[in-house]
Length: 124
Image (cartoon, rainbow, N blue to C red; front, side, top):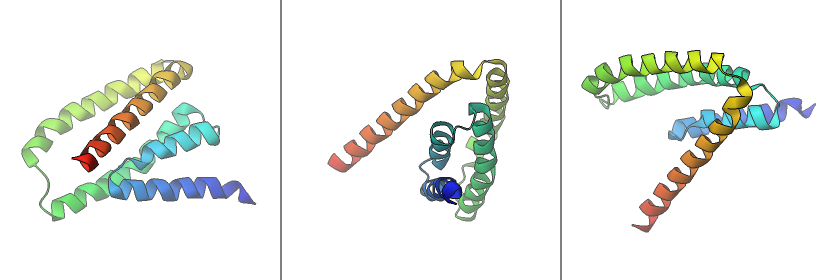
């Protein structure tokens, strides 16, 4: 009966974090891989499917408010797309177990840097 509760709470939390611009997909990845035993590649695919409409709505919202820097987009989109394709190809070719530890370390470092920045902003 409660098998749906954790995925629902994770989706709800990820949605709220995404609306705040914090990166709800990271929460989604952690819950899926650590708590729901979803394989890493499948969790990444679900995360991508979750991210695309969320990012699209963010672009629409920023465009309506005149917050898009079109010159930056013109230079960032081709490089970002190329890097995403290259990363996807590498990730598909590498054993999932080899990706888990570096990805976990990356998430911990990113969280630490974010928390440190928040701490500095509140202090100063």
